[in-house]
Structures are given as C-alpha cells and as structure tokens.
Length: 88
Image (cartoon, rainbow, N blue to C red; front, side, top):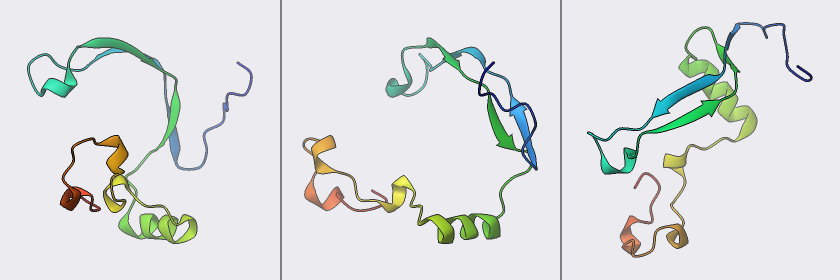
C-alpha cells in the first residue's frame, strides 16, 4: 500500500484494520442500532501514557479535552444556559 508506514514508530505497535459490529440494542438508546463498521489499521502506544508524558504533550500543543471546552449551544438546542459550562 502506498503511504502506509511499515516500520513501527518507537514504542508503538500496529493494530490491523477490520470490520466489527458496533453498538448495542440492550444498553443505552444512543448506542443503537447495532451496525457493521470498518476501521483502518492504526499505530498505538505499546504502554499507557503516563501523566507526566500527557502533561508534556498538553504543554507543547495547548490541547484541551472535550470536557475542558464549553459546549456550543447551537449544537444543543434547548440546553439550559447554565449547562453551557466546561465539563457539563
């Protein structure tokens, strides 16, 4: 394949792509329906990221998680204004 990195980046392993059933009919309504999805292969760290490594990443990139950003009221019609807070 063109453009696919064959040599593992340092400390990473390759997870092959595939097709699987995603969702649930028996848990939360937003997980339905069960559907077949396909994902490409990807590289993942061989070990968990430490808090120190994550802190360095955040310092270097300014990354913020979804929980750290206030939700956009336009994406949540009817959301009470007091809910438009990070972490809500």
